[in-house]
Amino acid sequence: MAYYCEKGLFKNFYYLIINMARDPTSDTSAVEALRSKGYKATPQRIAICQIALKSKAHPSAQRVYEEVKKVYPTVSLATVYKTLEVLRELDLVQEINSPKGQARFDPNVSPHINLICLKCDRITDLDDITVEEITSKVAAATDFKPAGKHMDVYGICGRCSAAKYH
Amino acid sequence: MAYYCEKGLFKNFYYLIINMARDPTSDTSAVEALRSKGYKATPQRIAICQIALKSKAHPSAQRVYEEVKKVYPTVSLATVYKTLEVLRELDLVQEINSPKGQARFDPNVSPHINLICLKCDRITDLDDITVEEITSKVAAATDFKPAGKHMDVYGICGRCSAAKYH
DNA sequence: CTCAGTGCAAAAGGTTTGCATCTTG
DNA sequence: CAAGATGCAAACCTTTTGCACTGAG
Image (tube, rainbow over all chains, first blue to last red):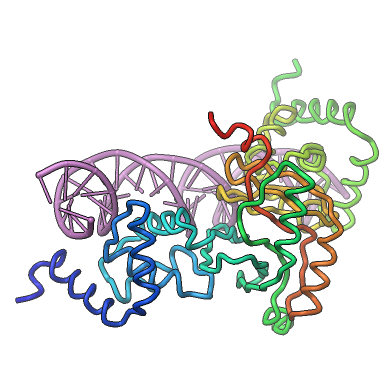
């Protein structure tokens, strides 16, 4: 029967499901982006892209892992870390350093401000052209070359200040 | 002789040296800031303030620990962490989240931009009034309340881009 | 004299690494 | 079929915590 080989058929089974459920556009482009730099487009990586490149919640590696496991139960946390590193190299995600000591990943690679809540760790994007103004000002005024396309601002998010007296 | 009691005389000896070498102004104010909120001004804390509030290198806790040990050899890393936490509460330092997964501490609590080098992890301050413009813009446009007085921008520092081909 | 603070060692995350096994191209 | 990727477990680092002892106020 089909279950005997956990590492062969099982994986392919899930790959199939993923392929059926996938958004053809972005999936194809993720595969292409991977291959363009010599990376292999494994089902694990595709599944991780599915989650990480679509989430707006700025997930941590752990969070991505949990989501990916739902559709690809055999994936390991180490693979998630390695893949996120690859996606960073391909400029498909940016890494955000949260105050709680874990990295967060952001598929929004256009210029924007990350509003990082110091209480609940929620991160909200704020698209703002000021980012470009600032980075070009920095580049002009100093010998520092801004590379990331995001700027981080810390504070208390709306939800937390509303829930102040809980 | 004077060495017999490592935890008594030894400490006081170093405390004396610290007092002799100290900058009277800032030291007094650190003591006052501590006491004003009910914290005790222990020699360990004063030594840590000496280092952390004067450094422009945005040291990590480990780095502060190493510096403090030079003048106060019996201090422990745990005490450094606890004291830095107190200093943060007193608004005497701000915490910066570096990409290398350790916190960095910044005694510059006026509005400024932190230029964070993704290669060598060096952090440079850039005083810029734009920070206030942006935080007030954010406060006006969203329900997010900016709290920190710094904004983080990532990139490659002058030294690293000069040393590109090493 | 009392309670907060210290120092130690252990625990607790988060992330990386080494290695045998498996799979893509 | 070769080079690269996976999954597991162990190693690593940074930070936090529990607790007996110490010292500031």
